[in-house]
Length: 392
View 1: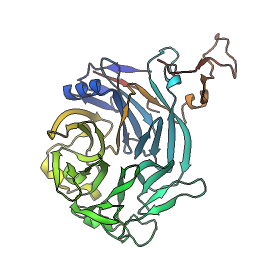
View 2: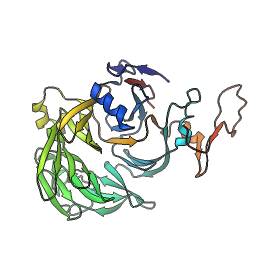
View 3: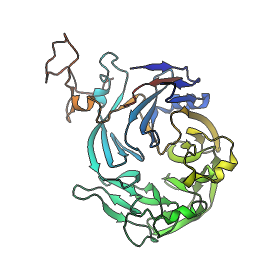
View 4: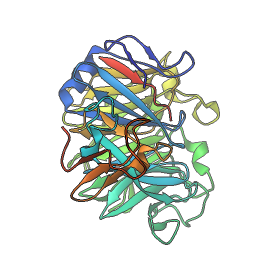
C-alpha cells in the first residue's frame, strides 16, 4: 500500500507516467460536509475511482475494470456496466474495517462482487435497478434491456423511431432517468433508424425521449447524456456544448451552468449537482464540437455546481493518467469505501451471511493460521488529498 499525502491541493502522482490529480478548496469543503464519497468510472483508463474523505483530506482509490461505464446504487448494492459484463456488488460494512489487517478501521464500506451477467459487448451505458431487476441502456441494439438468467438480454422498450432490435447502434441511446423507480426518460444522439446514423447528426440531432408518452420531448441537442429526475424536473447534460441543463415538463428548458469539458456523468446531491468533465481525445467522433471553440483548455474531473445559483463551486481534477469520465455516483454515508474486483484475493476470503460476516484467510508465516481457519469474524457494523496505489 502506498499513500501519498498532498494536503488537499498540490498534484499527487502514483507514478511519473500515471495518475495525477488535484482538488480545490471548494471541493474539499463540499466533500468534508457531504457525509459521503464519490464513485467515478473512466472507460478510457479502465478504472473505477473512489474519492473519499478520511477526516482531514481527500483520498483517491483506483481499481481496474474492463471498460467501466454506468453505475447504479440501490441500498447496499452497486451495479457496474463493463465491456462484456454487468457486475453487481454488495457492501459488507462489517468486514470493511478489517480489510487491511495492519490498518484496522481504514475503510467503512467494502463492495464485494456477488453476481456477474455475461452480456457480451452490448456497449451498455447507463444501468439501473428496476423492480428487483437490472435494466441497461443497450446502446448497440438501440433499446432498454432487462438482464436475464436465461438470455443475453430481454428488450423492454425501444424509441418510437427505432424499427428493429438489431446490433447497429442506430441512435446512440445512452442515458436513463428513473421516475418513481420506473424508466422515465432517455437520451440519444439522434432520432435515426439507420445503422450508426447518429454520427452525421451529432452536432444538433440529440434528443430526450419521454418513455411514458413514447415520444421525443426535447430535440436540437448536441450529444446529450445523463438524464436525472428530481421529482419535478429533468436534469441532463448537453455534452457537446459543456452545459448542465434543466427542463420542466410543459415548461421551459434552460442552461444552469457552462463548464470547460465534454460533460458526462451527473448526480444530484441536495442543492448540488456533481458533473463529470472529459477532455476530447478522439477527433473522428468528437472533433469540431462547440465545446472546443468555447474553451482553450478542457478539463477531466468532477465539477460541483450549486443548482440554486448556477455557480461552479468546487473541482476535483485529473491532471494525468485520465482524460475521460463516464459516470459519477454519490455514496451517502460511506466516507472511505473500498471496491474489490475478481483479481483481488479478498473477494475469495470474505464471507457474509444475513447474521454474520467472516474473513477466512492466512495472515503469514508464524500466525498459526492454516487453510480454512477463521482469522477474524464480525456480527455487526465495524465501527486534503491522498492517493492509494491500488491499480489492479
